[in-house]
Length: 287
DNA sequence: AAGAGGCCCTGATAGC
DNA sequence: TGCTATCAGGGCCTCT
Figure 1 (spheres, rainbow, N blue to C red):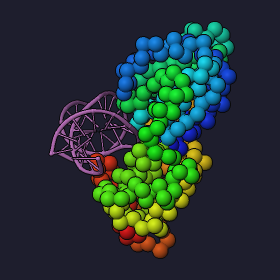
Figure 2 (figure 1 turned 180 degrees about the vertical axis):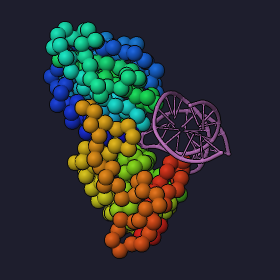
Figure 3 (figure 1 turned 180 degrees about the horizontal axis):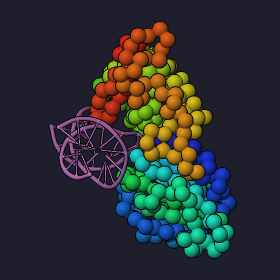
Figure 4 (figure 1 turned 120 degrees about the vertical axis):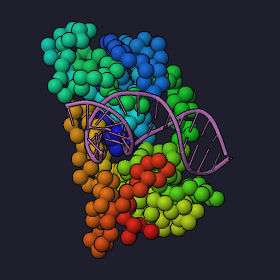
């Protein structure tokens, strides 16, 4: 599911709804996510206030009142649901909460507040929670990840320093979170289309102009996607259960066999598996 | 040491 | 209808 824009959409509503709210109760239905939910998870959260919800790359960072953190990665199919207490009564009775939009299965974790709860649903269980004791470990956790496209560190010099003697193709490099973080399989294809670069082009051959376009279009695509509420292919929903709209703006992703959207291009969009991930591109205008 | 490939898991869809 | 195969937005691990 979620690349940087989708995680940002979730972050915004989560921040708005849970800011300054105290965790009353935590219910774990299934510990077996990508990594096992630690045994002290409930104790770690219970009674703490949520100061704010931040994000780095595809990670949600829930900032707790004692300066500790709870990280959440949504994996491929994780969603967060905000469910209100219909009877506006005691928080601890799970049966008071209901929503027709809440999936029936795979609701692994529930975090209760006074008037609502948040539910973590994840069919494939590739998502995970991680508890972080303090800011030192938070910084350490993200130290290896590359900058987000928006950050000034993601600039021409930085990219050049990465390209030297590299044999991999540009599509692969964009998916490398240690190079740039937040871009996933959908937006990598879209960024390369806008940049008129073939996904299989070896990064060794990228020109200065190519790199400039990649910087610009990475920012453009992600920002537009956030504006449209993210992309919903199959799983992604925001915390209110609504789909995003950016999928309507896809130029290449899931457009195999359709005409290239460039007005002066007669190309057909092709789909090709590159390093085990499907890639979409126009072979006429992406060189 | 970089990079390709496999794997974690369930569900939707396609093809027979 | 019911089987099987394939594929899905991520990231980590292993092997070469």
